[in-house]
Length: 411
Image (cartoon, rainbow, N blue to C red; front, side, top):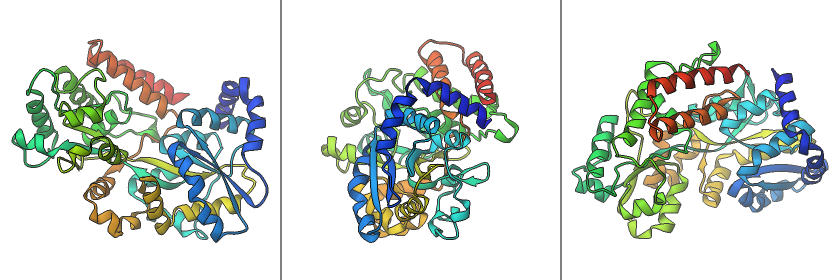
């Protein structure tokens, strides 16, 4: 399987790998005392400055951080796999771990757990533990986590007769329906149809489980089909807007979309862009069907398989996953700590917003741990679009989706 994937990667990147090799060898940073780190998005930008404290504590080491935009990161990593010119430490979104682990791009860290106690799986939420492993190897250490919770306008739900947020699917549908009945331009719940994890969240809450050991995704199970039917019913009944419409923060502020699902990053966005809403909104754990499971997202730190500075890479990952470092990183980046012990700190318990995420993180699942997850998830979004926008038959579309997904799994 690895040979097959390496061949595929080589074909994909052959047209630009040679040109990129020069860039990678220059950007990877070298020397036995340099730790080259590839970090993504805003975290990558902030990590450059944040790493200076590590350098002060380890004067024999220098951290060379390359910040990579998320929309370029996947292709850049493919190039690194094909060329062999990668960093010492690489940040991976949790849904990418299986793909790059199967390609042999990530070092097995199992033998280093004894020397680096922060690498032990017992330090992390259950939902994170499965993202650390591939084929019984430890291939990454959780750096930060995120999950989805319910954001809601407390004042508008109170006006609709609800003193508390909905706690079940039935309550969520009833409250959203009542809020949508306020007028033609009003909706009850916003569901982002571009978010690939939301359909899986509903499915997990309805008791859905994949059986990857038997190569069965179980997308034809009653639990999965019932969840997608519930998901699409919000659009069919006009409770959620089928098209994107107004920016969610503005719609939340205006009150046209008084409930939505999102991650911790939305806290600061709402505070910054809608300060007038202070005291009028809150967060709650996900409404429950069989469970109130949400997604486990975030990012892991891994050692690239041909790192020139393994010792330095291990020290850096250990430092970034220490409890005190994680609290400092929270203050610098507004990303949630992956270490469960960090959630016992006063800053995490005293802030009601953080407290909600802490409760939800106890009931999470990551995306399906298969290299084909991203492609399968995009196929599901296309299937849902045909049902919601095109009016296609749900049963027929899910039948075709299940077959397509099973074929992808065999690749």
